[in-house]
Image 1 (cartoon, rainbow, N blue to C red):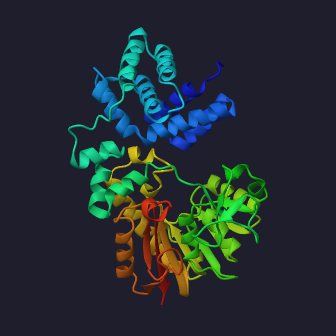
Image 2: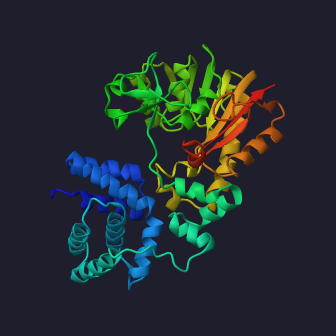
Image 3: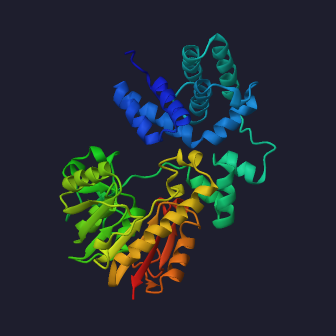
Length: 419
């Protein structure tokens, strides 16, 4: 098989995302494993893919402004060659513009025809001349193009969130990779943060390549995800149910805090993933196959602490998974809210008297967050709001975490106690 270069590998990933509906992280991982490139090329391919998808709205606007052919008329091969070319020209200063244009023209010849190569050359040479291409735009349309967000998301966050532009801007930032302490002492190379005694930063790049990670002394976990577990108030010996557990990060933390943890998921392969993670971190987890949306009489009243990190639209993690914003629309939040209610109805029955229930999502959507909390308290009078007891607002019973305000992923956490 012919060896792939970084740009051609990136092109294949971008095309798979569009044509096959592939998830960015999975498509990238699969392509990199098949391509068997040098680490430097892997890094370049990864940067091009993530950057192109993250900034796709603005990039498409630039292409549309310069192209003599409508974007919808272009083949996905040629469109994505242009996209990654514009991305490199505007965001990767260390790469010479001439190199970007030349490499993209070569790809256009391979995946198109001589006319395609000439067209790509012309568009990218114009793009290399600069300009912001924002003249004539205003209001929501300007925000959507400037921050590469779908128009429906701009309109939604303008309705629901204060300082919407700051939030949109933050979703284009590069997120820090935080870790969670899984040992008595902080390992070499890591440092504590202000989020909690367990939240660490690695000072030398990727923590998964560290000895501490290999030895199970740390786990990669954003502070927001850690706070969802701390809000459970796990005590030594607490019977803890993580109802939507995969890949298991919250279950592992609850077990580290002394909980007797049952971690559930609907898919068999994810149960295996939880078991592998628990082994690396040296914690005991009872991993169970279970559909959270179906009542399990075995669980009724059996747990002191229940965590529902519910399936959600994922709008709070666009920094890490930017393809989400191009796959979702406004209806997803409304449909997911119905599933979230089904799961919480079951979860409520699993909490023992005096026990605690925490609901969390990795999204920023009132229908899935504040709306669910309001519905739950109205329909379950046996529960009352409970103080989170942790994080930036410990006395509050619920919090919407945002990257622009808190430096974390966009997470919602709400706590309840059974009366």
